[in-house]
Image (cartoon, rainbow, N blue to C red):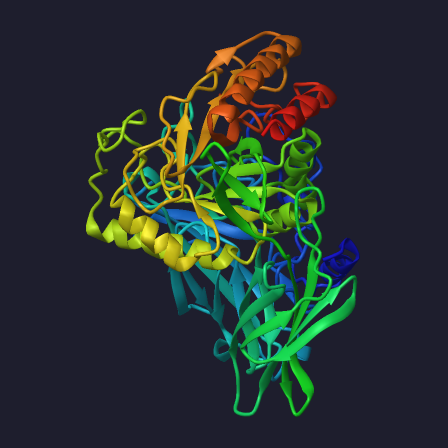
Length: 605
């Protein structure tokens, strides 16, 4: 999809019906930590105004970001009165929320705001959409229970039509509870007591909230799978249809239709196919409609790409990852996706794209999204910019209650995870894959990292494969290693590259290395407390060491490594091993030299 298509999103956002009337005087960032330039210039009346679902765009919608009221109560209590204002969608612990408070495991965070449904939405169904809420959300309209959702990373929606009245001012209330590291819920690097590689907890609404009208007969989602060998695109549409209604799918190249078919499941022949890659991130537009007697009663705009991820052995028997049937060394940074002012939430869409743009400028072709899931717009930026993604499942625990062995097979042990937590893991991992497999940039799923909460590895791999057989599975990045049906054996070693295991049956990668630290004065989360795997005092020292490690990596590529991840994109809290500072105000290394080193690594295979 071309960028001109997505000018529509900005236009839709600028004309989106908004009932946020708060002015700047009701909000200010809290705390004395460093901030990004986008956080410093944030307008609370224009918080993330872009349409949040670029893979499936509708033109009429209401953005509910902005100032809400909030209260923190005991978990089983309701608030007698609200405590003040919170800026949605920033987690309550963050500076940009305007609150900066933690929520305990026995407490509840309440949100409340009012809204009026536009008169022109009459006769349509009204959907209330949440990008993500961490962790359990209970939703009420005018005091009546709408529904609940558990899981901090997947989007969810409710049909609230029957609770609404024309012209009436309605109350929307959300109750959130979040046990963070006090139970086996997926939480990634969030902890109640941050230190080292573990960061501040994130509670509550942390992605855009919005409403939109849809007809009774409407499109819910779609999934497109390219077959570049056959030159076809299979599209499956999930839709609520009335009798006689049909789905129409149109594929467009540069704005011109190139294929069309009717049905919930269609296969389109793609003429003069143009493949997506980091060097040519070409996107096709999709237009999907519900037709009644030839007239569209619902329509969404989406996109897709013709690309294939696979693997094959080279002449020496080393398994190599292939993109579009060609070997490609995948090389990129470990990307935590944290922000000093917004924590899980980037302060603007420009900020969200910034890290990807800089990663591209640095000469990388891939990002490992580490034990976190991003908003949909982040993956769209990767799609349009040409960035491969390895997507982690947010971990459910650390490895303090099991044995982590990342240097041998079968000597690590499972985490003692209770059955209800295992069921929840499958529920959330399934929701994440279902929501984000639509994005072509994702080429690898990573269910476990360094034995953090690792359990029943083969069963989890089979579950992952069942959800999406089109991508690779890096079953245990950094261990524990078992003989299973996954595709990738992933070693971690700090600070320098090392290959201490090799298995001809797997794609062998170096999933983490580096961590070269440099604390840049004036850009530190805690000036008197910082940490890195190794530390230096100047950019030249860091880059010289980076290049030395890159040369070591090139030698190991000859021995069989097919991909590598450098730690990491930015500093995060007290970690100072980023290529950029946590506030994104300093790129620590000379980008031109860094890019040349990285291109040399990628091209060496």
